[in-house]
Structure formats: C-alpha cells, structure tokens
Picture 1 (tube, rainbow, N blue to C red):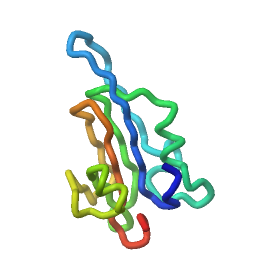
Picture 2: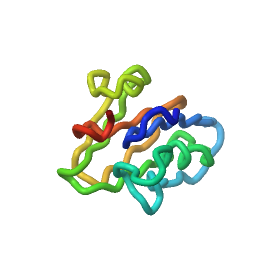
Picture 3: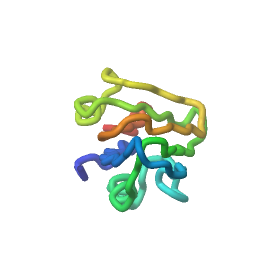
Amino acid sequence: MGRKSSMAMAAAFVVLASTLTTYASTTYTVGDSTGWQVPTSNSNLYDDWADNKTFVVGDDLLFKFISGEHDVAEVTEPGYDACTNTDTISTDNKGPVKITLKRTGDHYFICTYPGHCP
C-alpha cells in the first residue's frame, strides 16, 4: 500500500460491526493534526494513520481540508489502484467533510485534484 506517495488514502478499514451491540460512534479526523493534504515527509501517512484504528459502522471520518484546494472521493479498489475517479462512489469538495461509515468492508479515498494522486 506504500506504492503511492500522494494523498491517496488506502483506507483498508476493516470494519467490525454488530447489529446487536449498542455503542457510541467515534469521529476520527483523517490524518489527525495533519488533516487531508498531500503528505510531505511521510508518503505512507494515511496508511499509517488507519493501521492502528478499529472502525465500526456508524463511525465518522472527518476530512479537514480547504475548499478549492482538495476534495475527497470514495472510490472502488480498482479506482484507487488506478488512482482515477472513474469508479467514484461519492465526491465532496467543500471542506471539511464528514463521512459516516454505513457498511462493513474496505473503503478507499483519494483526492481528485491533479497531481494529488499520481
């Protein structure tokens, strides 16, 4: 997953959810204090960020970015691997963006701005 030195976030969110358990949802700020931007010193920033978290259905992902400088697109795995928005599930371009996880499985996010996902 470290093959992209870009903003592409291979969010391999293994979501463990139970419909029988009540829990308080958690809001995660993607990239923590760095926010959603092109990584400058750690090309694996978003992979590393997601690795130590357990996400569940109902959790929120907060993408902090400046409108007009970035966006956030949820794409399919092939769309992520090709770094293209042709397989886009959703796109939001007015930051900040909060995305609620509504299903289990992997989720893949990229920025569609030129040069942000080479």
